Length: 108
Length: 111
Image 1 (tube, rainbow over the protein chains, first blue to last red):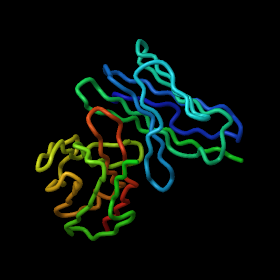
Image 2 (cartoon, rainbow over the protein chains, first blue to last red; image 1 turned 135 degrees about the vertical axis):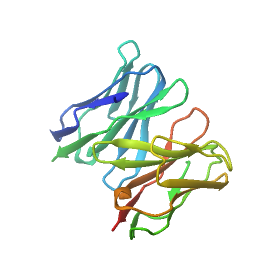
Image 3 (tube, rainbow over the protein chains, first blue to last red; image 1 turned 30 degrees about the horizontal axis):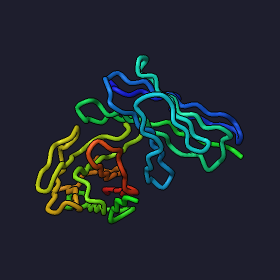
Image 4 (tube, helix red, strand yellow; image 1 turned 45 degrees about the vertical axis):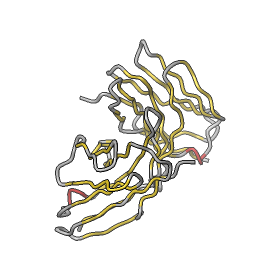
């Protein structure tokens, strides 16, 4: 049983396309994180959110607590956005659960 | 910015060797974590530590041990490396309820 499910697992897009990655979870959470992992392996935190919507540059993250669902959107995608995007949730007891990631490739 | 440094990016070891993976963070974070990442399985927690000399098992502790003698350093030890421990190992630190900061990862191959 996976507490966090992401879709799609793999995504290929043309440069400039609008991209959506989805995350559904089954536990009660205090926060949800979106992480980005580049081909070299390093992981950076993109967003931490517990309600509503956050925007940073071309990235937008939304969360619907009632539906236990979050989306990560990338507007005007670029090849440098190619990475694995990981959804992680922090349960009320501070336990973290991770999705298996969405591998995004943006083609010029 | 918080920095989490893992001592090696790539490592090749032989079966049966004792392997040390080192992780150092520079922002006085209480919490440190070791994960392994495998295709299709995502990140899985091996061990974590909430304080110096304190350690807790994660989801997959078998075959691993850890050491936290100083707050800034959290070491993962493979007592006798096996081929099924070939993986990407990621260290992370966290202050309280804030988000993670990850190291750049160590890709370990056991031959």
